[in-house]
Amino acid sequence: MNDPDRVAAFVGLFQRHCVPELIANLSTRVEMLKVAGLTLPLTLNDGAPTCYLCSPTTAYVDYALEETRTLGFSPILQGVMRGLIHLCRPLVQAMGLDRQAQVNNWLFSTNPAPELDRPTAAALRDAVHARYPDRAIVIRSLNGLADGVTLAALRAEGFRLLPARQIYVLDPGRPGGAQTKSMKEDRRKLAATPYLRVADKDFTATDYPRCAELYTALYLHKYTPLNPEYTALWIGEMHRLGLLQMEGLRDAAGRLVAVTGYFQNGRTLTQPIVGYDTALPIQAGLYRMVMAMARDRAVAEGLFFNISAGAADFKRRRGAVPVIEYTAVHMARMTPRQRLALRLVEAVLTGIGVPLMQRFGL
Image 1 (cartoon, helix red, strand yellow):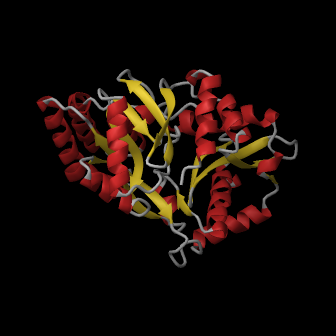
Image 2 (cartoon, rainbow, N blue to C red):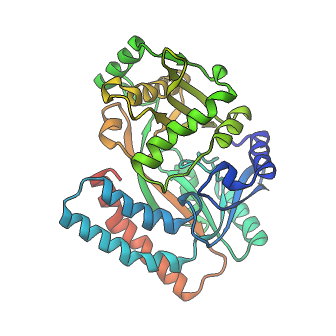
Image 3 (cartoon, rainbow, N blue to C red):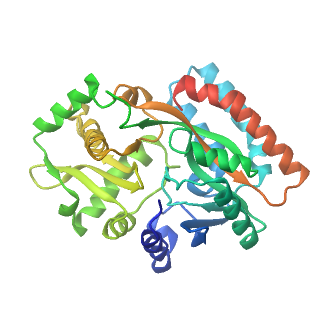
């Protein structure tokens, strides 16, 4: 699935620029891993706090705390959930997963993974531990619909599978999924919009700062500053390298009012960049229209569309189905404390976390 030239272009970007110039709230090292015929991006972290892209503690504790604030829980339920999350912080930290070598990390919230059979999973595990014996191996963004073979292979080779979040996917093989009433309304709105639709080839260097501004307004200002802070340089370089494909909408003055960026790996499409002018009235339907653009592309090309987490009702109404996403982890050497912490966290996430994710669409 991974194109070696694309991986090389991605890793080369971090040889030309320091990480904060590209993703302002992230600290990591980016390298290339070649094993069993696969070429993969690899990120390395030593345990210091950073963005959730490279820190399970941030993902499982700090981001979870943010979710309780934004999901409209009653004060009592919010207090109970926040208390449970705070109690889990020492356990998550005790696992030692923040000191990690993360495989196939494209530094997006969702990283479509190549399929791994059991021999490949074993070769990958052994190669990474031989190179970095003191780090945990982490592989994010795995789900049962797209990665069933990989999950089974990793489990058989000793990886533990930690539930991470509930995501939503559109499978083009699922009849009628793209023909819901809400989706038809979105398409009609897109067809009648007064805004000018902007294709990938029409994006220029002058657009990248506005893309970053619109993304930041939505994901960091409206949602949470724990989301990756992609800069104009990052968006521009990823677009120029062909790793991101862009679409958007301009107003009559030529100014972008909405933007989306796609990342395709194999037959999976993701949408890591979404932004719109949050000062405009919601009736403008900007979010609806950029989501419709992405879904139309996925359906037209027969792609498995991973729409990530959040906005559960919106996505369900448009034919997406929920599935639990997992993070696979493996450690070469574990202390009894780490082993106990990992088992406890796995039990809490499976027994309490998954039901809550499914109930509240986390």
